[in-house]
Amino acid sequence: MKKHLKWIIPVAAVVVGFIVFGYLKFFSWTPERQVLAIVNDRKITMAQFDRELAKVPPPYQEVFREEPKQYLDQLVTKETVLREARRLEVKADPAAEGEDVDLSIMQNLFKNEVLDKIRVDPKEVAEVYKQHKDQMGKKSLHIPPEARKVIFLNSIHAQGDEILKDGAWVGAFPPVAGG
Image (cartoon, rainbow, N blue to C red; front, side):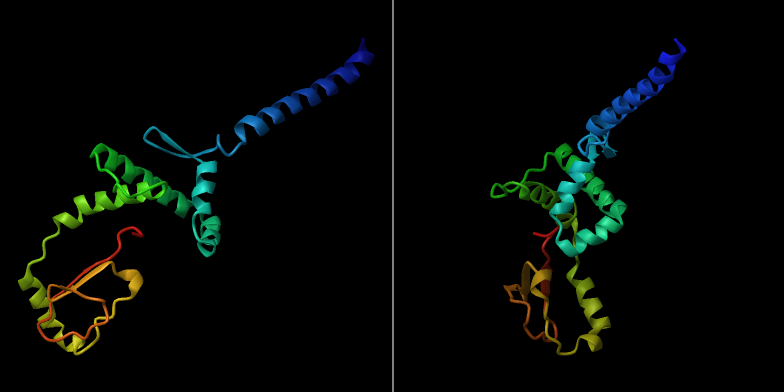
């Protein structure tokens, strides 16, 4: 009997080890099951993190791989903003398709809850211009293309490279969240 115990215990230990390893390998260690964060009732898994990170341009991917918490925070923020948009019943633009739907919803939420509520008094703009007039001089408006979406100069659509004159009224609307 003692002879059998000498080999049964090590064999049983190895079998139990394989079972535990197999369970962890196929169930717990899969990226779809590794939960990185929970936002309300929605889980952000390692697989979702990897899919989202793959959409980021390569130079930034390296930065986020070194500091994954920074990108995870962005994913949590995105999920929180989309949840608020759903709560407020914000819709995407009809032309938005695929992954652009989320972006469109976030842009519309930002527009509805922030941009549409901003009121700037023309007297306030004139006062700031008067205070900084010497710094502005006859400089070109020059707004880089990636930083502009719609520009108005004296209530007329502008390109962004016009020369400003005293008393000019400028309105610039940047792309919102990449749009």
